[in-house]
Length: 337
Image (cartoon, rainbow, N blue to C red):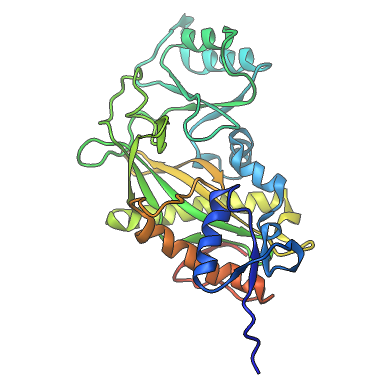
């Protein structure tokens, strides 16, 4: 007789949106929650992808170094800057941009710098600077956030939608230690609610994070397949991801080999497009903040199909120890084998 005993999972639903969503969708297909981690068919251990490789993508300064080594044209000009080296970085900026023919400028038309904390997400403590002196005063201030940051050339000519709104593109990537890495076929646009402007006193037209002030929405999220022109951007996005992940595998080859258990990790990669239709990589987030309520506008269209596809193509093969099974290439494009 066939084994009709349901499969079990051990996840910490209260600790992360990934665990919560997997739990909900596994229950929907008949799986049972286990209170014994070691006896479950899928557990939090299967979500423990190599930590160092994961941090290399999530921490902005580490990702910038990886991109500089592997595909330097994929990201806007970026400097890793911190409490110790900031005078050297600002001197480098001065020599490269602001000092011409022995004349020092404090501000140049169209030149804006964006400063991002390397270890934070969701637009926290991001700042824009037009003047070199303002950048210097920021680092001289005792009240600023310390630690690792990235200082990045701010693209002043983003591709805008018809109503002059800036946008970024979020794509989901699945990394595994047993079958490579894959790009889910649908992502979404984060469209700014405020029309774009080169005035930097208001960050809302510039930053396409979901929230900037508490729970007030800062963007409108629209699936990528609702924009016909996205098809022309997709190949460049895929190439950038392939190059970054090839570099990651070179740096952390052990991350893509099974040690004790088959593991996977979910990343959200963010891109933007300039007025010349060049695609730029912005950053990556490990276990991005997936919605956990049914009232999210993309829940039924994007997220539920995503979780169902993730379970069918990754979770169930892990549970069945069928690790040679490749994901459905109509849903997941291979980035790295």
